[in-house]
Image (tube, rainbow, N blue to C red):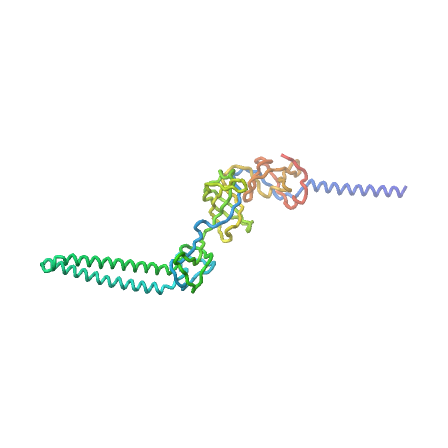
Length: 364
């Protein structure tokens, strides 16, 4: 009897301890995750957005190929790939020794003909004086006038020849037509270039602010997009950095991709483009309009798998309520279904909320 009583007492102790631990665990579950704050559902103006994918590319005309209109030896080359260059700065010089000699010869010919014109003018004036005294042949004035006109014509031709050589001499100095970055150099100092048939390319310059974003927008969304819309986008290389731009133009003709009609939307990039490169892929968000919506702070919304929910207090306990979230902006998320304006939700420790199952659930 005594041993049986001891065993029964031990069993009751074990059962009691188990019940105590069960009650403690149950009360801990009822308590739910630790509350760190509260948030009230507010009505606020948010932007309607159109999502699309895009690509970074060079604007038309942003890439300029610099060439030479003259044949000759490259006497000076002042750029390398990656060089920053300003409009008007010297890129290269062609050996102009022969051009300088031709120009000197043309200028000398001009001076000779200028003297001949002065002589012809003097002879014509002398003939006119003699004619007033009836001391010159009848056709002498006419001959002198023709000589003067012929000499003046030859002088004009020589002046034009000198101007042509002077222009060619200016082409011996190759200057940057735009400000930008040298993308390629295709010649070297000392090389001979021939411009008889085609203009040889010395260098390629990419203009500053030469990049643009081209987004492919589905035909179902293109009606909401208009020039001037603000654009935010990220690229795969820098997924946490957000860039900004503005819609400049919408292509008038669509492009069919995998049976779906898309329209090209050209976007000017407003953010610094120092890290962007042509052909980068972008995830694009185009803000098309403002509208009223219910919003909550981003940290108030919890996620479990594909389900989104918030914590609310009912009868002294935290319970979850499923919600349908919409547009997500900086710091806030739109609530499309599940809550009303003025509802108060609890902000809980996200790590703790994800580590445990929701204590109970109230569906809208």
